[in-house]
Length: 210
Ligand SMILES: Cc1cc2nc3c(=O)[nH]c(=O)nc-3n(C[C@H](O)[C@H](O)[C@H](O)COP(=O)(O)O)c2cc1C
Image 1 (cartoon, protein in one colour):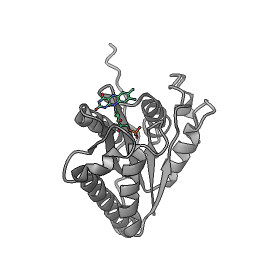
Image 2 (cartoon, helix red, strand yellow; image 1 turned 90 degrees about the horizontal axis):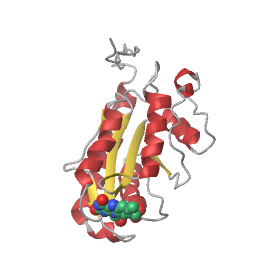
Image 3 (tube, rainbow, N blue to C red; image 1 turned 135 degrees about the vertical axis):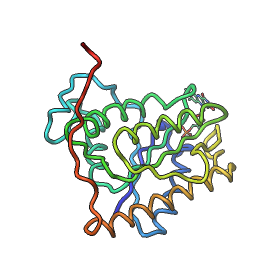
Image 4 (cartoon, rainbow, N blue to C red; image 1 turned 180 degrees about the vertical axis):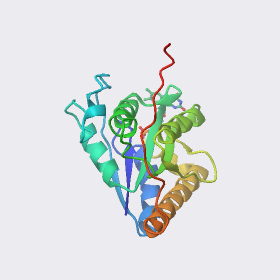
């Protein structure tokens, strides 16, 4: 059982890393493995070539870290998306990762992320947390993931590196999210054989073109 976190901050050891470590502690204490992936700033945007949709291995044609992220997410039981708020939304490099992850793995005829446990958090100085948190959730919503929440929206405040550790309410939200995600991963692992997930089948696409 493993949860992987995608850290969308280009900063090393920033606030995203620090709240991910809060989640990590809660997850590991519950007996679930935890891994953090931080792609950094060298992530390219989606080329809209749609080659990944027909690729049986769900690979993107671009040769950066995103294929490794897709593979890690495929093998994981849970996926945590974490981004800093940049101008009211998801940070640009994280948006590039999500666009490509979704197209390659979650939107084609075979959705490799369906019924995986999802969770989201963002960090911010002041404004845009709710919008960003809901943007992250929306990605998982569209991939048929089992979205776990905490007892409040996943926005943790802090501007300079480490300031988020003073937002004790935000830290509690992150910790509770970790506990809830780990719990659901364990529940699903226990019940996989006795209560299997509904069978997957491709969505009929309709482009509103007459
Ligand atoms: C380009 C840029 C845009 C930002 N935009 C916002 C914003 O719209 N709202 C906000 O509250 N903080 C904003 N911030 C602050 C970051 O969200 C905040 O410092 C966050 O904790 C950084 O996380 P990190 O340390 O993991 O990189 C912005 C920072 C940068 C670099």
